[in-house]
Length: 252
Image (cartoon, rainbow, N blue to C red):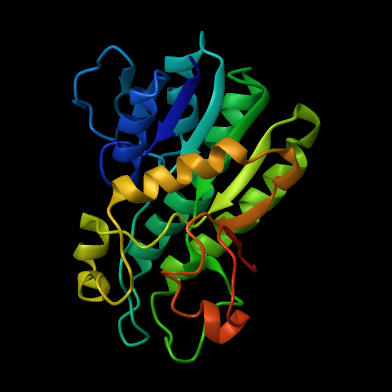
């Protein structure tokens, strides 16, 4: 039995990861922003009141886990606020940056410095292909500055953490899990792209991610990957060409 932490576990990909890891007889610690999360079960322990965008998130999280040694941490908490050049949104941008690329630094810091993340463990930062500068293409146009840029910032955070944690033998992966049929993508109007864009359910994306994590090691630390390949990345072939492999290492 492994100890697995899922940060951002109450819905979407996070919820699917919790259920699938628990079904494989792992002990799963699952965070929720709510102070009244679902009830804990045999293999799932809920950790309430964890807001990744809060300055104290790492400290509060450690207070729950001080007697635990983790083998795997997946940080999948996210926020998506749509914007355009005509209507940029300052507060949404700040929330996207703090949730996606600032909060994870402090969570990882507290877990490592307090000995919760053991030698040989893995950290998976759930990013998006939208954070790749190389994959941005004129056909998509601009806009959604905070979404794209906060994911690009998370990619940089993951790369730098891979250097800082190398001596601890902790592998850091940056992952595009796939285009998903979630309340988040529906809430920003992306459900109109679900069928043509090859969107999958969170359960399907979680299964692909878990399979990828099992093979992920220090050999790949600091790299940016799409476990499901190019199938849901509309700019992959126009930018990178045809015949792309699965999994696909993404360009920065």
